[in-house]
Image 1 (cartoon, rainbow, N blue to C red):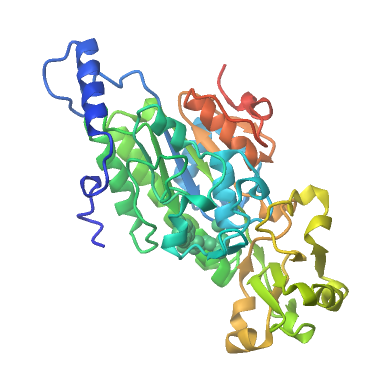
Image 2: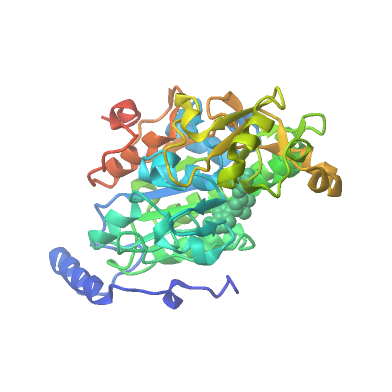
Length: 428
Ligand code: AMP
Ligand code: ZN
Ligand code: ZN
């Protein structure tokens, strides 16, 4: 895909008639006889925009490494939490989707990046576009759906869930995930949408950047490569903020930067080999590391469980219905019968996989216990809804959803989040 020429015009725009009606209405209200322009834009002048930015794997302490000036400016203008506490498992898809639905993974159904559904009799992985675009996987209702239902276009660029039709709606503007799309093009794509006429212009937009996750995995959270990745995603935030400023939109835009989880160093000295204990022909491995998800044939379940239960002091093995309550995990039908959770910094793998590339266990990872400090991400926000210079304690990422719904002035669906826990972040 050529991103420099990729424009939303090429996407499915489902509500042209509706938008035209809205456009006509807004012009009438504003008494405007000329076409809309960037600077004199009558219809949405009072509207606040919401731009949600995700830095994948951006740990709670990265903002203090001195290489993210744009994040520092945002923090000074607004609010910063000491951390954003992820939900279990601390993986990308489960946590991005939690932040936009207010449900923990066990309830929204994206219980891992890689899953098996016993009713659909189908597997899911992040790179399987057919399944990522299949609405049957995505429970709850992400923030862009009620916004679309209300007749306003949304642009959740690359936010997990954005590619699927959910409850009969999908975002007006979306692209299939393409990790190679340059960050500047991602920002341009959003800015082009903001240059559209009233009615076609979204007020809810998201931006997703993953350099910090990739560098954290390959080189560890304390590496020079991760420092460079922090600089890179911060630079993209700078482009976004300048883009808003150039359009005269910054003062009425709430910009919220979050991350899905943190990163913990792994080591070749902290590895658990499943195949030392279990014949993997008897147990289908749905997911590996650091949360082992095993679906053995009925007749092998007991034997597999017994073989693994006390196999290693740094890997806890559970039947799905006896996972400790604080994980809030194990009720969803997609959680397989046996779950193994590695201690922080440990790797679960097999001998052949490890021997092929031992370096794999010598970088960083996430997915671990959500209560680990270094699994925490960030929450930094500024805009008309936020006071400036406020620092608050870490809070749970299920509470991001009711906050976003409040900013959109839409009723939050009941779930695991609670505005009462985060309402103090807002001005007045
Ligand atoms: P993980 O570290 O396994 O939790 O996954 C993070 C990786 O998922 C990132 O490096 C991204 O490249 C990739 N990713 C993020 N969003 C998507 C998406 N919507 N579709 C496919 N892959 C994605
Ligand atoms: Zn992630
Ligand atoms: Zn990752």
